[in-house]
Length: 307
Image (cartoon, rainbow, N blue to C red):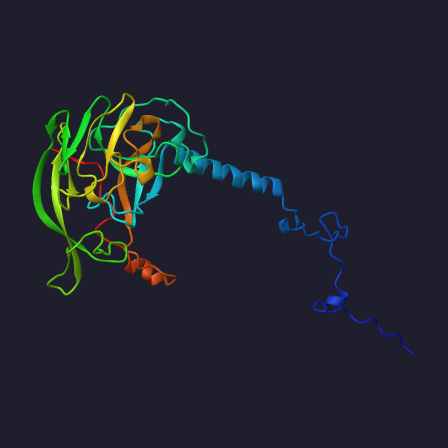
């Protein structure tokens, strides 16, 4: 009997393949998969530290450079409407205790790199003894004498220039409802079938040539007669453009006004521009966010015109 030769190995048969080897001919060691990054524990200290630094950066920007501001009342109509969102710059008049957002600092005297607002500037002011923010226009500077007679402003013995303008037709919406208690007999239906508030407009011009529109409902409202009052050093006298619907320097603190001229360290910034404005019809439906935008308000400058 002859011996049968062993079968020739088939190169396609993996069971017969030689063991994998490296260049030196030795078997390769098993490949180790690195541990996933997600398996590393969260460093909560670093996470909280990063969030705190971000919040401090936002607070510093709002306190030193600029911050957003929302208009909640009608005191600055027709130039500012309820629902307007603004940018307020914090540096034009220097920095003081009111510069820090959210009123985190207690009231204190003095300012850093302070300067006095100009006639006609729209400023943010904090009433003495309060933590709320008002927005008004500068009418009197330190040393000026202010008097109001039948709604006409008299500055240093001279009545400031005023001219009657065409009535303004302001569209009625939830943020500008034109209530009869605020604007008696002024709500009307336009030719397009929509309701408007027909507002009487008086344009005033201050001694530095700055001019702006005001609303004057008549000469017999409570704040239409005031003074004479001399603005103390280091103070400014502020009034709202909606003269008969504004608690400003003419109104006492008990009347929720500013109680006379405001100390310069209580001036928190200058209004610069309207970023966007909403008519009050927003709800949880995102579509309403676009529908409620007042398209003609965005980008409106709040720096007064100068002749």
